[in-house]
Amino acid sequence: MPHDEVDQVVEAWRSQRPDLAVDSMHVWSRIHRLSALLDTHRKQCFSDRGLEAWEFDVLAALRRVGEPHRLSPGRLLAETHVTSGTMTHRIDRLRARGLVTRLRNPQDGRGALVELTVAGRELVDDAIGALIALEESLLGEWSPGDREALADLLRRLLTDAVAKEPARA
Image (cartoon, rainbow, N blue to C red; front, side):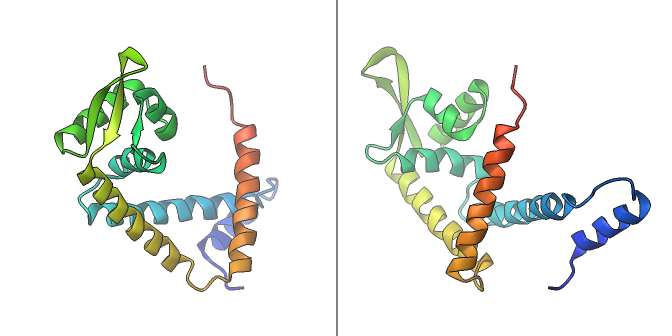
């Protein structure tokens, strides 16, 4: 297996701080670097379609729920992990672009629903197709078994890390 930059960093820390068990850096530093790399690729993929990453997140949440591609702002908050004020601003910007509409919630007269427009659906469908192609190209040489094994290990790592996440006030 070839060495990479992370191997060099870990060895340097091991040399400078032999009192520390730095083996976990082999995992977390690679995840950090991969995250930054994927973020750069995704931003370019979305930018090529006139989208910001946050716009894709909101449109994709609406698209995934199926017809009529409609969610409450509260449910969009849960799907995209942003604050209420941020979501209001995002919905307003997407409305101005004609990608979503805001409707009265028939089950709650005080509430609203956000619905994907035809233009929003076409844009998010194009973006998800391009994103899947991009992500597939990044895994191009990996066998189905290796992909499944990696996905299983990452799922386990994520589940364990989330379980240890500090409670938010």
